[in-house]
Amino acid sequence: MTDAEPKARGGVATLFDAVADDYDQSGVEFFEPIARRLVESLAPSPGEQVADLGCGRGAATLPLAQAVQPGGHVVGLDLSSGMLAHARSAAAARGLDIDLRVDDVAEPNLTEGEFDVVAASLVLFFLPDPAAALARWVRLLGPGGRIGIATFGAQDPIYKAVDDEFGPWLPPFMRDPRVMGPDSPFGSDQGMEKLLVGAGASNVRTVTFRLPVRIGTVERWEAMSRGTGQRAMWASVPTEELPGLRARVSDHFAKARTSEGEIEVWQDIRYTLGRSPRL
Image (cartoon, rainbow, N blue to C red):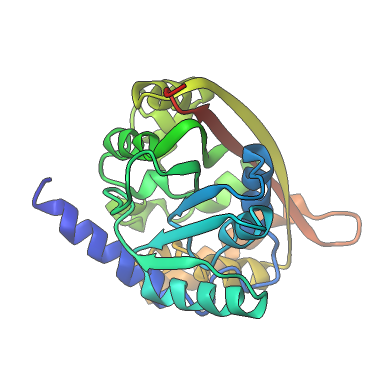
């Protein structure tokens, strides 16, 4: 472990504690459909044991827990106690018994070989050493177990232009892993598959889902953005630059309005799927 890693973990925990109340609450459907497709790809069955790593407010955890009933069990880990508090409330409202713990998913405190399914939705690129984390995750699987990782694929050019507006002020830990050099595994299906194979998984494959992101208005986009990890981007922009930033974003989104005047863009989601090497 490098000296910077504990600081980075603390920064991620602080960031997501700060956004926990607003996370995925803007009315724009984004994280839940991404997580739902991941769960469908993993096809959990009644009685299975599941680990959801970086579970957040439970977008994947809740449907996983429902799918493994009766007789199954789900453990959800996250660095943010604030996000877990919301996940606990959501689980209780649905009558689901889920083991939710504050833990570092880069080095999860879980028993190797214990799980039928390991899921991680939009988490891996936050970790300082994705390859090492994946190797640990694969070792959590028992014989015949499945692992599924959701990451970002291609992006609507208009949506990318909006994200790029934050470039001059972007904090280093928020830089898009797809463009951090030609060797980044997050830039292609092949890169992610190679990463999972290198972690020891077998039968590795990719499934891609194009998510329509129905934003509606610029104001709703800002609420959505500020209610995610992107809040760190907003905090980095000087106050005097905000009016110009909003004006440029509005100009970009003007090209993405439907006939009803609503903003709609798209984002590809990559699901990298594999199985335990244990027979």
